[in-house]
Length: 443
Image 1 (cartoon, rainbow, N blue to C red):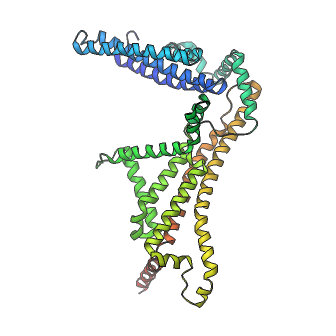
Image 2 (cartoon, rainbow, N blue to C red):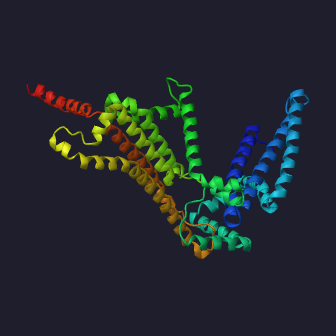
Image 3 (spheres, rainbow, N blue to C red):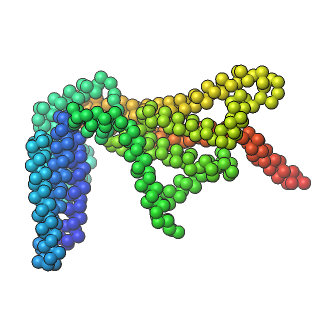
């Protein structure tokens, strides 16, 4: 930009890169949805190819015109940049030979179109015509809608036909929103690794969520400070509240012991529930395989706690109903099967409750997104009203609530496996304290 400070020019380029990535993602999704996944992949790689090329050109210009031009470091940077441009040229040739060239070209032109539009917008925003246009919101809205309809009418007939066919296919019944693995699998339907990727889709997303949480935990605890930063502050607040919650149920003696497992369980389930709200991601807890694995983990851990805390004999005595008199021993043939079936039902109830709520939440959002598209079907547009957006606050609440319910039930299952005399002593201490306090106040 002529006459502008260098920082302003760098800021302009940074915004161009960000806008190009967003516009390229939208273009790639539209082509993948309405033409073929290969076209979407070609457009995305075309955008990355163009942005990398612009970055290399910028680096070369800086090396040739900077204050240290002619010096060995600058010459070395220029040589590395030229080599990178040659490698990028070869990569572009391979892309042209293996992907649809037209979609690749559209993606390559996205950054240049963004530059032109941004430069035009800077000129337009300072004009009197724009001030008059922005002064009348109703006229501006009519103009924007008219331009959108005109652009869709000018779209190739193949794109409109594909969009209409997709709309008819979606009318057969709602499906989950496509995620990244689904898009990749559809782009390479005949590859064996594509089928393996799709088969282990829920496991991959679950491992990805776990890896992200591990990285965040490492960053939050790597360099603790007396005045914590935002990430450390959030982590400390979460640990404090979860610790108080677990101790409030299990008591100080056992709360500290089981806090790491239960807090990790809550954070992991909450993150998996919320992960599906990110575009092109999926909630692993919407798969019964993942939720049953979580329920089975809690079941095995609770049984291990019972055997370790009560001993093998005490554990069997607990399953029999702790008979201490003749009536109790007579009821053992009835109580033992009931307790065994109750323990076996715990992982099933945990997994089905979590799976049903998260999967139903996804289906509800898909249904309303389909409704939003059908409301504008008369205009034959590839977009619709975002009817599903109103359920995002509800999805946030439901995700947190289901993670809390799962954790509370797991805590209670562990509590039931602890020695009963300690529970009774703990409860008596809580009951005697208010009575003694009241007696002292009356006296």
